[in-house]
Image 1 (cartoon, rainbow, N blue to C red):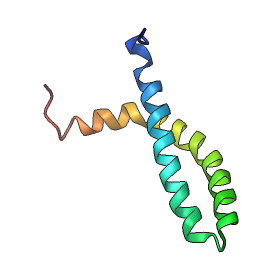
Image 2: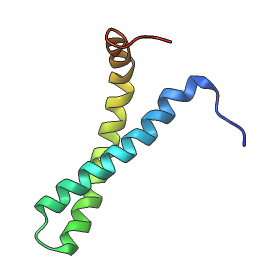
Image 3: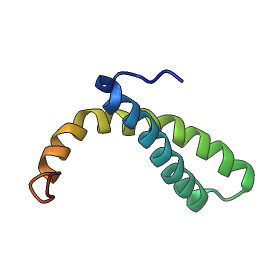
Image 4: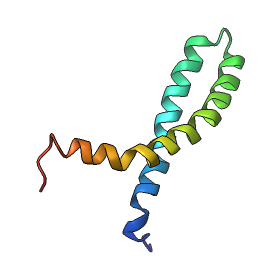
Length: 77
């Protein structure tokens, strides 16, 4: 399998991390607030479709700065 160049690493990480995070968080919130199973699935899909792009953009924008901040507390290789 051909791999993507390293310059796309942040983008690919953000894509996977944001989808996992938005999936779990929107599912939990939909479960807590849905009175019926039918509404749960609709609310989950609606919440996920709103949350995923927001989380993705947050990771893209804040990720590099947060990585530098974390380097203040964690040893480098």
